[in-house]
Amino acid sequence: MTPLGRELVERARKVLNDVQEIVDLAASEKHGLAGKLKLGVPPTLGPYLLPYVVPELHERYPHLKLYVKEGTPRDIQDALVSGDLDFVLTPLPVEHRALEFHSLFKESLRVVCAPDHPFAKSDRVLLDDLKGQKVLTLESGHHLHSQVRGLCDSYGADLLYDYEGTSLDTLRHMVGMGVGISFFPELYILSEMHSDKELKVLHLDGADISREICMAWRTRSRIAKQSFELATLIQDAFAARYATALSA
Image 1 (cartoon, helix red, strand yellow):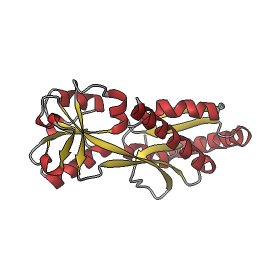
Image 2 (cartoon, helix red, strand yellow):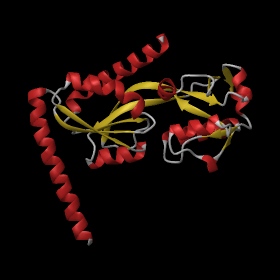
Image 3 (tube, one colour):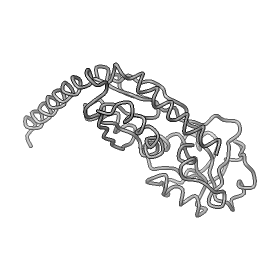
């Protein structure tokens, strides 16, 4: 395709997005949020949060059709800026000036090891204990990768670049086989890890390791007026999930 052809296609796509947004905006004026809404979310968050958010969205906005696309934080933020998505749930930071965001909650990260690892004898790990440990994480491009890499650099742990996981499930299996320890988001742990016989979950003393999750949208998006309402709904869903897990 010629440069002119690519520019025409891009302009046509923008026009179609603008037309669809006008149609959905008209429906939203009548029914609240309505029409098609495209959400972007990282694969390390969506499957473990959305089951508690989607039913609430459907109950509050029965005329809303939600489409979900998974991707790394950078990819979904780029898609949001280009108009391919309407809003995203993503760890901070939000890197585009064209986006507004609202902080939702902090999600703790926990140390996870195999049941026969020396760490498994306790429920807690000291920061100094990380020195020399072999650490696994997701492949580059994921927010979790850069976060774990920073921990390894700061405390002398050995990040295993040759064994990067493509998903949290893959990472969990490698930890279970004793390849190394890792750090997992708490929502994933609550959803997928139910027994110390498979993996041991530990607290890291001396550091508040967490990721801050936010909701982001374009400044002039049709959901801007409902952004606070949407954010509150998601915060409530997270709080309910966390409270249920703690009482179980």
